[in-house]
Image (cartoon, rainbow, N blue to C red):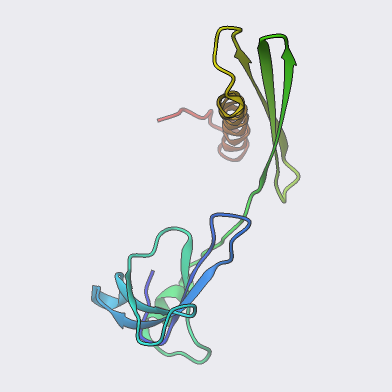
Length: 169
């Protein structure tokens, strides 16, 4: 990532319910346009800049007609951002002093891949009644199941594209 004064820094939101954050680069502290950057966020008070070390959810937008070295370097570079949403459904069934919580998580990608993970948690009759614990356990197990399936899809894709079996490192 390379920026120069006047470029726009955009940080995508990791949450669906929050907006991305944008700001103008007012200073470059790294060598050759590399981070950290002094940034004035569009939602900040005037004169209040922040020192930013951008993460993987950030990208730099150069103003039209820019001629900096960053433009030449990034002309050959490619950056893509995708958003995958995971749908989570939790249900609980109680019988006397015991309870079971089920979770189902779903992932559908733009290429048509659709996966579903499942998880379950059980409350013993002598356990305290704290539904959040059952939900957390069931959802974590469903996400783990989804993760396992996604690794299997990736392994099959690696095999299809390279002709070699996937060997986890």
